Image (cartoon, rainbow, N blue to C red; front, side):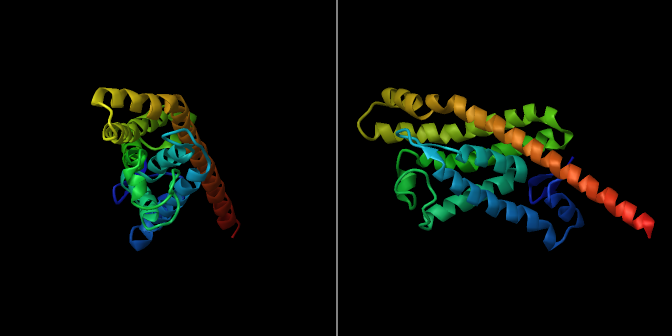
Length: 228
């Protein structure tokens, strides 16, 4: 089961589930906090990087996919829009130099930045359709598939823009496409797939722990009430 808040999916057991059930303005507290948190985490992930030209390898994909899985499609995408907004406003949060500004979108990695929004949305959309991770470890498999779907949504604009970027610099379309695939997709498929699996496992385990704590708290409150 899941709650819907402004189109997002909040798994039962996560902090926003109880708040959202009550309705009213407070029901947006968890999703908006999640948007801010994942925007910051994506920015932090940009600093955990091993550069490979023309696309840097970072932990951002992990946080982008987790944002969609936890916050749902709309709020997950919004968290990445917030991240992009930080970079556009001049905050150095992007992985590739110059780390901020419009110029980052015009460079070879510009399509991947746009793809962050699509990836979070698609991953969240799949989770909304297939259910929350509260059922336990067996949910890792469908959540990983959701993550892989989000990964595909990330690669499409990334590959398209990298191909165009190379073609505009004198390469033919076919040669540019082959080069873009070889340098901007193929080397990262295995590692990014592992990130998708890691994100799904993290979401399931964290949600399970939160559910256990919530149940323990409910039992403690019930026992305390009975003693009265």
